[in-house]
Length: 244
Image 1 (cartoon, rainbow, N blue to C red):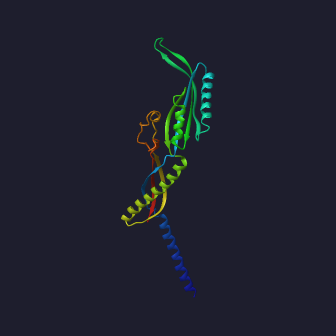
Image 2 (image 1 turned 60 degrees about the horizontal axis):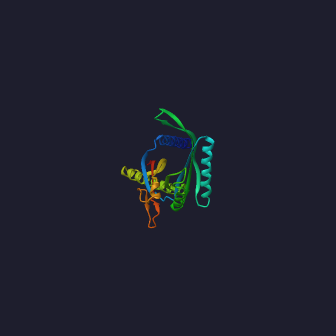
Image 3 (image 1 turned 180 degrees about the vertical axis):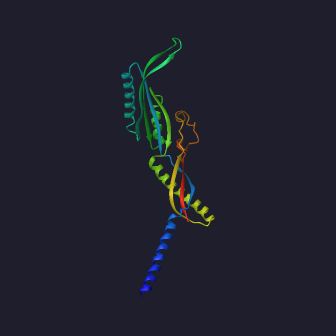
């Protein structure tokens, strides 16, 4: 009876050793992986329009120049209170302006120039056209950088959806490559991605004159209002999958 117990114990011990050995071999075996790229291309509706109103004043002193500029900005801000717009100051600087006098062969001071830029944005082109009609050509006011763009909330939804499509595209490619070698794809081990969005400015003079100076980013509807073509959004991912 004692010999039998010893024999059973020896078999169990040997089995345990073999299990440990095979377990160690499996742990040491490197994980096979495959790296693939995935892409997604979609469009996003440009739901916002913005214009920059740049106020520039020139006066003999800094105090007078800045007062004239800030007064003009206050006038603009007050007149736009009744419109559904958002406003923010994007530039404020004041400096001594000089120019080269060829007759005297020296630089002369013209005064102090102050510039304040105010970005005005709205949900529609009609509102911005009203802003342009009110301030284009006004004293010390210059219009520039008219643009259409997708708001962050709209862009976020489109990017997240497109990212999922790009990852799915990468997995399909990985499956095709792995099956060719008689393997199958497991879990995704890592992924990185990049995004691009097309943005184009609208020529301001196209609105102020004949509305005919349009480019590839804009078009005109039946009512004669400029509308933006959808922005193109692309997502590219680089993913690494486990293969078995």
